[in-house]
Length: 235
Ligand code: ADE
Image (cartoon, rainbow, N blue to C red; front, side):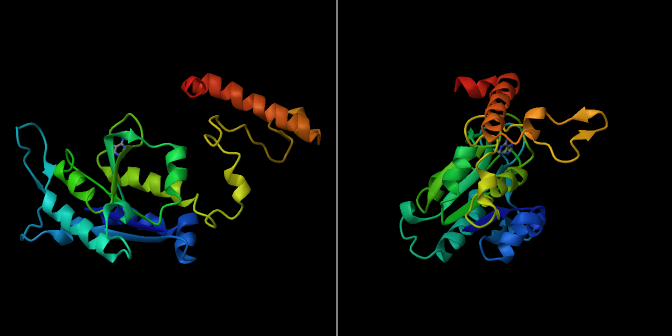
């Protein structure tokens, strides 16, 4: 899978060189390229923002550097002649649709995803209309809170999607029994020793009885979800 990131803070993405995703990049499973939006400015100050029409607080990101950056990335993709076969453009935004595990799974089958990381009060709205002429566009939110920009959100989405790309996680079975994969939170896990500082591992897990272990885990999943995330049960 190819992933491009457009940002005014490329250094944010240096951490993609470590851990699981770093290894996946080294193995050629993920081709991640980070681009500085300011490379597509033409003035001496490399300006990417301006005051909002209609007034109001803050600054808005100018459309032209975005269009040039997205054009350059889309042009590198083979076979992307029309919007439907072009890249998936993802703009992290608190005003977007919710990012979930099922969205991550859907995106893990994409060939090419481009993350556009906005700063300030956002990106000129016309950029989304323009991007939809060269690819598909999604505005996506991590949750109901506001970050300073899209970088941290894009990083979270890259990790959630990247680990679902076949081969990135060594043991694919470990992806099955996770929180949110079946609409429930994950069951609790324990390792040795069976007794530690006065806390004991639940007896059923030491029984060696697979059916009873599976029933207990399912019960724990339902109970945890009911207590911590009742919203998931009513969806
Ligand atoms: N940018 C700022 N806040 C965000 C959020 N909650 N999710 C995604 N992108 C964002």
